[in-house]
Amino acid sequence: MTERSCGNDAAAYALGALDASEVPAFERHLGGCAVCRDEVAEFSGVVAALPMAVAQHPLPRGLRRRVLREIRADPPAVATRRQARISAWTMERLAVAAVAAAVAVGIVVGITSGGGPRLIRASVGQATLRVSSGRADLVVDHLPPPPSHKIYELWLEHGSGPPQPSTLFSVSDADRADVGVPGNVKGLTRVLVTEEPAGGTSRPTHPPVIVAKLS
Ligand SMILES: [Zn+2]
Image (cartoon, rainbow, N blue to C red; front, top):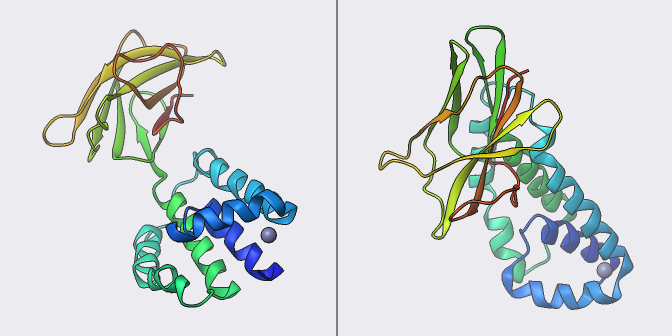
């Protein structure tokens, strides 16, 4: 392996774009290549930080459509990797598309209802937080059912305190969930949704798929 293909593989690996048949060889290579280990760590950090980084920025109009079109146009770049190493240029475009896709699913909806906007980021579905008379309802459309043995768990954050476990919920046949937020919204800073083992947990074990910010 040349140093250059090392670098391409690290990026593809961190983004989950490395051909499955090449993963074992690359993981063996990782054991002996500090350069690739560093690059994977760096890329993984960037990928992991993305969902939180996009929390509060509305998407430019048309971005999602453009990104999806790019990605649909690009998959052959991954599929043909077995025959020929893809160029650094292609890899870069693929990485940019993957990053943009991660941004594109961070849908931000601003809601004005009884006192200022509520910012919502949803990596799944389309979330709306309805607030009225001090009560809130989280309504999510196009929410896929949780995987088997999993459930969605609602968490409430007050001030800068840790998230408190709240309601467990699934979705209706129409892929919709309408979840009442227990209690008064006063002092509530964020409402989160995570995917958790059936029965729920006392602290989140997964990154949130929905974040609604109240203040
Ligand atoms: Zn390497």
